[in-house]
Length: 144
Image (cartoon, rainbow, N blue to C red; front, side, top):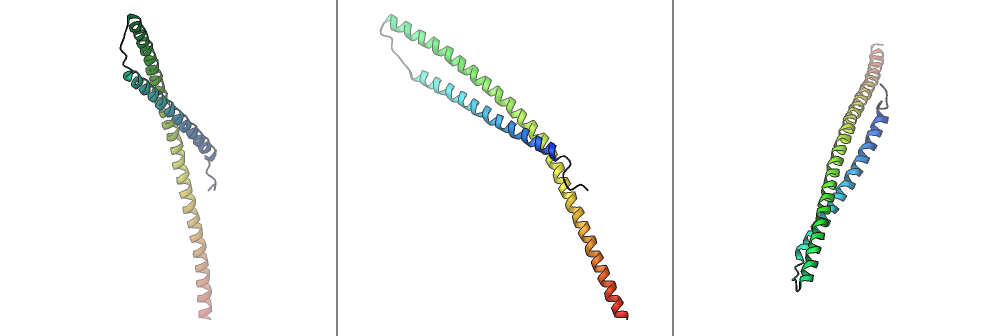
């Protein structure tokens, strides 16, 4: 039996792909969390800003600021939704990469177990041969 796992190169490739997918997942997770935090901070800041209009020009300025803020919140909502979509894609890619690597890891474990069994059988054969040879020598000396 071949001592080296025949699919070792493919397993290394799958591990690299899994690592890259994990890295992509971490980046997507970070982007999603950042977008959520920015959106929450903007909503909190806008919710805390209560202004009283003292004149019609102040009221127009407040209306313009609110309209601008609504546009900014819509942009942040879209950014957050895009980050969440990227996170879902990255999670799917990581899951697939992990699944592919896991299959090969199981094959490698089976290969290692078969090698260990073969080694034990070989060792047992050697021990049996030594014991048999020793027994024949001892039996031969006792009969003479």
